[in-house]
Length: 225
Length: 314
Ligand SMILES: Nc1ncnc2c1ncn2[C@@H]1O[C@H](COP(=O)(O)OP(=O)(O)OP(=O)(O)O)[C@@H](O)[C@H]1O
Ligand SMILES: [Mg+2]
Image (cartoon, rainbow over all chains, first blue to last red; front, side, top):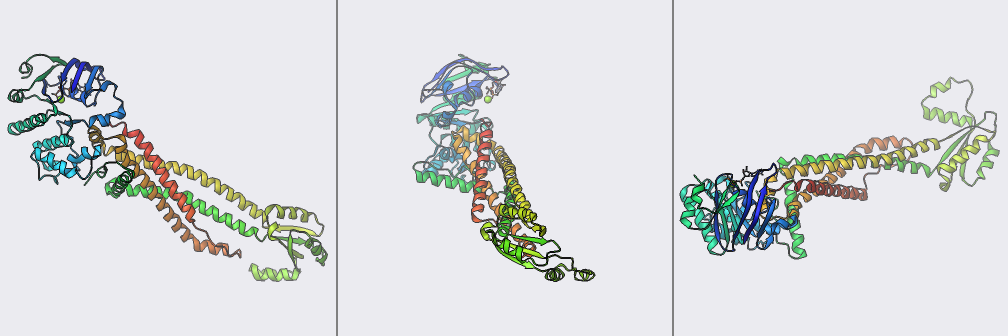
């Protein structure tokens, strides 16, 4: 469950990236987050993982009020959330296997289960057999899928993605979105920020549309060229 | 190549906890051998830095030993006035003092022939018309009274005697030696503190660089829920191991220096007639140095990690 209650985010310098945003995404639901460039999509996702904190209002995730979450509780909180970044954030010096296994290592999972879990995650994103390769040896789409495998390897209750189809072709883009729908079908709460209306129409999921920091209750297509 | 955090495992139970730490420890140590890290240079720099006070300590210690060696057989020479023909009476009087073990009387003739034999001025002394030397009493102290205070007291009293012209003793030399040892001891402390600080600076700086070179990794690990403890561990071990290896290097360097000096110093000291043996760094002191190096390494990396890790926020 993700709930925003009258959330405003003002960056140092005074720019308000989010203005009085309120919404609720129930557990197990999937939604798209859309809006023009600079509308505040990434900012909204950053508030959910506490990369940034709300200036006003409350963000509640899985019954935890993030406004009051102390710093030392962040690591345990973040383990409930899988995040797919637009720039992948893979570790270039580590193999695909090691990259995907990292959340397991960090969270202290049993090392005995690690290979099985990593292979299961890689299998879902269609990268089985590339465990020993390094991220830079992979295509952009493959790197993105390694990022997805890493995000889901611990079976988090929430999955966030920021422009996950940013630099892949249409077919790959569809595959990736289908993956998110698949994770949602097994009970994961999914929130995907995207520019591409095509996916929104194809998957028919609810849409949160941002315009200059305001959450607007209108059809998404009016707000994107 | 695997990351330094890779080896961490689930931490349930003490044995597993220790196993984990050992794995990360080994991994962090292995990272030190990466040529890019310049870590070997750091270890050598720490070694040299720690070797300086250690070497000074050993030198001071040796001078101190030398002084003690002297004290076990203190000796004072009394040169009598020229007109004393027979020193037996004075010799008997002094002999009764409790601090005196034995007194040898050296006649002017004996003195001159000794002078010829040992001084190398044999020919020059042939030019003399008469023997210029007086009777000399060589006073040997008992072992228990062979200390600066007792010898000084005796010298002061002997100088008052009418038969005594001049008193010569090593005691002044020994006093200076003691002062030098005292200065040496303090210098060791001052150097140890200053260079200890230098070691802290060196190690905290390499740890800072190591953290900076892993900023991206640290950010990603924080984003996927890695705790500060988890992130900190390999850097702490790195500082600890660098300090410890630096200390081992320092022990080696000190030992090499002492061994290189052994022959000339033994030769030099040997001329003063003692069977003196140069002492090197003892096992205890090597242990102290090791503890100091690894302790400083640990403190330095803790400090550095504490300062720089919190700056890295995803
Ligand atoms: N760290 C920051 N400091 C100051 N301003 C920021 C910061 N991050 C974002 N902003 C500003 O906040 C606004 C929203 O940024 P955000 O990244 O959330 O937009 P976005 O909807 O994700 O855009 P895009 O589609 O281009 O990724 C922008 O005007 C941006 O300049
Ligand atoms: Mg963005």
